[in-house]
Length: 404
Ligand SMILES: [Zn+2]
Image (cartoon, rainbow, N blue to C red; front, side, top):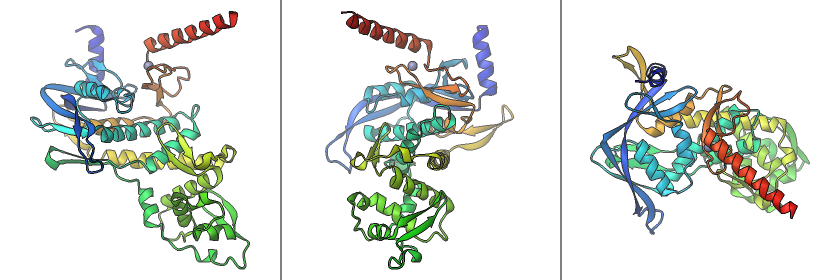
């Protein structure tokens, strides 16, 4: 063994935080019929190859890596590779599963089919958690716009359920507690003090974020579903506003806090129609960025932390502590690659390391860097050289046209 390989092995076998084993999967494109649509949808069929075992380990500073037989690193940054696969790129997913195995355990001898839509939704959600965590751990680069987008993405993300091995293995991506809270309170009665629109021209509110007042007729008209401006009739705004105006006693403080944030954001900045991973879409494109200031930004960060906690905890439910007899050390039993990827996020040390997206637009991979390294923009030197060369070509071309 070379000196270098030995050093890596020592690093990995003695200082990794957790390890995980799986096996490679043969992967082929197929079609699947679902309840939602009668038309067959693109899917992948996965067949595990139990002779090809795969070993992963997680270490601080490197994240989840795949190991060679001798314990040296075969591939870095498995999480970054997965989320960098282009949306609905069947070939990209197949080659990932062939190298790294599937996201969930498949019984040996079995084979499973999963729709690309379901698969993409699972990966998008992991991607959104990664984005949210890296934006709030790297405050020098933080984009508050992105925090809001990822907060709303999580709160209303589509639900996926996956059943494998004849129903023995089930995975559900639940609704967030806040969206259930909103739904169960959508018919809540208004606080009694908000009934007297005869003696009041304004109502004063004190919530977990601020104190302010609103016109009594406005409050009345929105709650009655007859506002002058139709944007306040939208079901989402109305639900949030109904909860905002309901009595607060007995409701969980964390839910009230999120609702206060959501209400102020929609009311002051703009009403969100929907979000995807890349963009926030506002009703009528109406948006007042100047109103997104200090206290609202702080509330966005607080809400983000709450969401990360919920998301990570939910995805670690199948990680169990065990005790390694051979090493006389604590160890972790991890059921799936997806759990291992979330477990890696769980171990990310805020203020110490963060994921950054490679600045080479042709790569776009997320890579792990110390927060203190302000300058590192590329995942590797190859990406840096390629991007620099592309920029130089673009500059030369521009200069040549100017010269003409
Ligand atoms: Zn790169």
